[in-house]
Length: 452
Image (cartoon, rainbow, N blue to C red; front, top):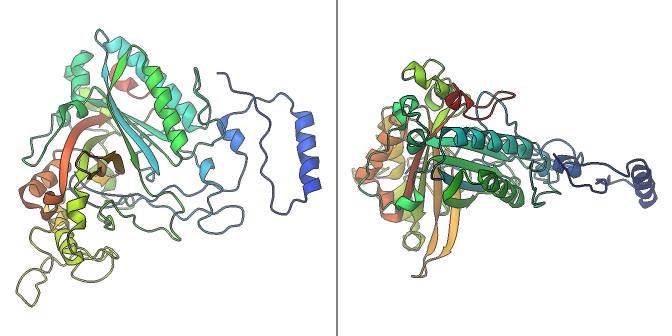
C-alpha cells in the first residue's frame, strides 16, 4: 500500500510561545525528512476521542430516535462541545458484528445498492467482497485506499467512518446460493400506501457508509465504487445527513425534517432483550445452512419522502395530534417528559383519548404491536426542489432486527391501515438485506456464506 508523503502535521499547544513552536518544528523536520504518513497520523494526537453523533430515529413509519447517544465531545480545553477531536474517533472494522448498526449515528451518510454485472457469479462476488472488506478496513483505520487513492481525505482522520455490507434476495440466485438464502429474507409484503420506484429499490448487494465528515464519507463511496470494477454496477445511491456531533450544548434527541423531536422508543443496548430482538442468534432461526447469519441482522431500507409543504401548513396543535407528542420537547400529550411512558388509556374532558387512536406514537408503540421492536438508524435527505416547487426531502429510513417478519412488517402493516402521519409522507423505495456478522481478523465480510 502506497501512502502519499507529507510534511509532519503538528498540533500547537495553547501555551506554546512562537519560538518554541519553531524549535519543535525544526527538530521534527530535520529528523523526519522522509516519513510515510497515513490519514490517521496526519490528524495528530489531539486529546481523547470525540463523541460520535447523536442517533436520530424515525420510522418505517415510526419516527423515533436511536438510543445510542454518547457524551459530548471535549477538546484540548476540556470544554463540552469542542470539536477539535472529532476526526480522531475510530470504529473497529473487525468484530463479532459489523460496524454501522449500533455505532452512534454519524453526521453524513451514503446508502447504495449494486447489482452483479452480467456474467458475474459466485467467484466474482467473493473476490469483490474481499476487495471491499480490505478497503473498508483500511479507510476506517484512517489509512489511504489500497489502490489509486483519490486524495480526497488525506488530511482527515477516521472521523467515525463505518462501512456495512448486506446481501439482497436476488444475490443468492446470481451466485448459485439459493439453498443458503434465509427465509427471513423473503420479499417484504405490499403495503397499500407504497408508491415504490423499482429502479431505486432492492439490489444484489447493499452498502451503508457513515462518517462525521462529508469528505471522508465521500472518499469511502468513491473507493468502493472503483473497487467494484467490472464485477458490479451501482443500481441506486442516496445521500443523507444528520446533526453533527457537538452541534448542541448537551446530548439531546435530534429533530427530523418535520421539526419533531425524533422519539425515544428505540430499544437500548442495555436492555436484556436487545440482542435477541436485533441480532440473529448463533443457533438459528432456520436450518443449519443459514448459520452464516449468526451475529448478523436484517436491514429494512425505505426512502420516505416527507410532504413538508403540506405539513408546515398545519397548526401546531394539529401536528402534535398527528404525532401524539409535544413538538417543543417530545413529551407525550398525556404529560411528563420526553421519556415518560405514553398514557394510552387517558381521556380528555371531551371523552376522547388524549393521544388519538390514529396518532403515530400510539400506533407504532411496541405495546400496541405485540412487543415488536426494531433499531431505527436513519439519515435525513434533501435532493433539491421538485418541479412543483416542493422540497424533495425526507428520511432514508434504516431499521435493524433479528427477523423483519417480527420487527418491521407487523408495525408497518398497522401504520399502513390508519396512521395519521400517512397523509404527510410517501414511501418511494424499499429494500431488505441480510447483513452477516462481522469479519474476524483475516476474514472478509460474507466469507462464511461464500466459502462455508
